[in-house]
Length: 232
Image (cartoon, rainbow, N blue to C red; front, side):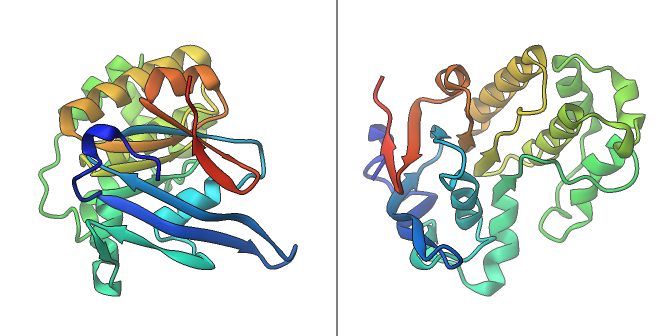
C-alpha cells in the first residue's frame, strides 16, 4: 500500500482497499486491487498514460462513482449515506474542468457558504484578495464574470473556492492543465504553502513529471491496471 512512512501507524484520513474498476463495454478491468492510504500532510502525485483511469480513481475516492469491488474508508469507517455531505466538504474533488456558476468570481467563491456543511463558517474576503495577489491578480478579478474567464482562470477560482475551507484532503485532477507555466508555478507554490500550514493532504493528478517532483513527496503511477510508487 503506498503511504508515507511517518504516518504508516496512524489511521488514514482516507483509505482505498482493494479497489477495482471494471469497464463493462470493454469487458475488462481498467485497474484492480489498488490500495492507498492518505494521512494528514501527505503530498502525493498520480501519473500514468492517458486512459489509465486516473480520473476514475479520484472520483472513486471522492465517492462520486461506484467501483466494481473494494471499499473506501474515511477515518477508518465506511461511509454511511447521511455523512456523505460532510465527507465531501472535508474531502474535496476538483475536476480538471472547473465547474463555475453564473455570476462573478466573488459569487463563485462565496457560493459554498450557502451549503449546510459550511454555513457555520465565517467568510473572510481578505483571504481571496491575498491569494489572488499571490497569483498575479488584482482585486478587480473578483468582479469578473465567470463566463468571461479563460480555462486557467476558472481553475484558479475553483482551487481558491475549496482551499478557503481548509479541507482534510484535496483530490486534484490536473488542476493547472489550462494555465500558462508562470500561473501554474504560482498555484503550485500557494497550494503547497497553504496545505503545509493547515495539514491538508492532497493527491494531485499530473502529466508533468517536473510538476510532480515540485509538489509531491510521494509520487504514484497507474500503469497496466496497477498502482505503484515511483522511486526516483
